Image 1 (cartoon, rainbow, N blue to C red):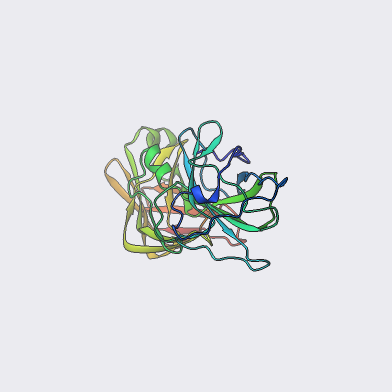
Image 2 (cartoon, one colour):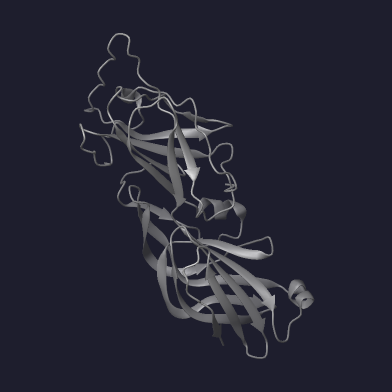
Amino acid sequence: MKTSIAAVLIAGVAVFATSCSKSSPDEPTPTPPEPGKEKIEIKISPAIAEARATDYGFETGDRIGLFVVNYNGSTPGTLANSGNYVDNMRFTYNGTWTPDTPIYWQDNTTRADFYLYYPYADVKSVNSYPFEVRADQSTEAAYKASDLMVGKAVNIAPTASATQIPVSHVMSRIMLYLEAGNGFTKESLAAATVSVRINGVKCSSTVNLATGTATATGNPTSVVPLAADNAYKALIVPQTVAEGNLITVTVDGREFNLKKGFTFVGAKSHKFTVTLSKTSNGVNVGINPWTDDGTDNGGTAE
């Protein structure tokens, strides 16, 4: 995905609610429109939020899922596993977004809430959808597969215009930059065999698609980041990691460990500039969240 784009238009989204994917067999059939009142086509325009965590845009073949929950008068409905007005409708990107089946507003007055997520999956539970980031993200495909985005737009009146849906990344991103310290030069570090691990993090989670929040589950492990653009990056489930060897950098077989605890925040990118020093057998680190929290998180590790 290329997050450099500000918005991705999804046009031509049309379909009767009775044709929606995974619709409940007991779901009522929408009332036919009154004579002279045609149903309004649903159009959506997901926009990736500024606090994005990746540097990819939507690509051909990408798929998203959409839930639509209607209001009962002025009372909003609740997103459910099934039986919503639209249940997990799949859209596929091929220059434009195309639904498996077209959808329309129920009528000209009924408001609705929209819930969108990427990538598309067979969602059994909207409140605790299981999602796992890859422990080995050393390839671009594995890195992309670890990205989960959700978005919602609420209390939307029927309109022929595209409904704007802000989309945010659920996971946290870590960006690691290596610098030569005592005993290294920029050239010797560049010529060395280097590997990086982020330790003590949980890769499994359950996600609430209505709120876009993830809860880390499972046992801690190590994540291997992707080396790209003179940096190492990985997507991490939001969580607090206890103090320990948070980062291990191996240079020509010798390990340098950063001992630190840290809290990874969803939809934020955390920058670690790691200075390798042979004389101290340790790592100097300066940490700044992608969105500044006003705190100096820097420190020294030995």
